Image 1 (tube, rainbow, N blue to C red):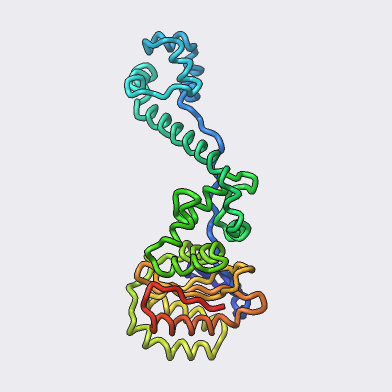
Image 2 (tube, rainbow, N blue to C red):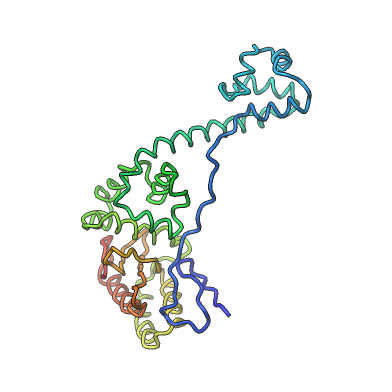
Length: 305
């Protein structure tokens, strides 16, 4: 029998589970995108085959040169609005259809060219825990598809290029990001912190209720004394109701931090990771971080080893 946990930051555990069986949340991998782009010409060819006409006949019907039709069919020329309208009259297929597939082709061609260019930056990501990101579902691309791996990492950090990853932390106006950038393993710390932010739906929480959190402390201490999985889940639910987010995210083995708190979009975000030896430390992390939330309502980062 299993218990389904509503929070997206925790995974299901058995009904009689101990705290050590609590599993960190993981991201849902993105579906793989094709590594090719199909020009509108391929769809025009299908129509030609169905109608039994050749390129010369299509050129006559469109009143364009055979060379222009050849370029259209091979994806070497894009569809102009005028040609799209002519295609509508010739094929009796709305021009919006031709415009849509041609626009999609151009966008996909640009995407593939971008991925090819991004592959050159793959080595610059060597200090980031790519294996961790893959294991937790944030990287979906095959390991040998370096360009798409870089793209997945950029999307994970929410930046446009590789250089911007460091700038978005070291030069950030947000205190906890600047502080994290000074850590000797800042690439791992930034990855771990960002993972929790990607896994936490802050929009689902009510506004932060400081007085409600203060009133909740005795209950949290009572639940900690019980210490089992049900008590822990009840504690998390109570924190959520007070506008406090909690994310249980996988550890990065080489990062000596297992708990952290900062303010994200006007909500305290507490995150914790399992320790390899035991998860019993979760209660101490949780209670310490709640105390920090009440003591320091700032954008600073507070971490626990």
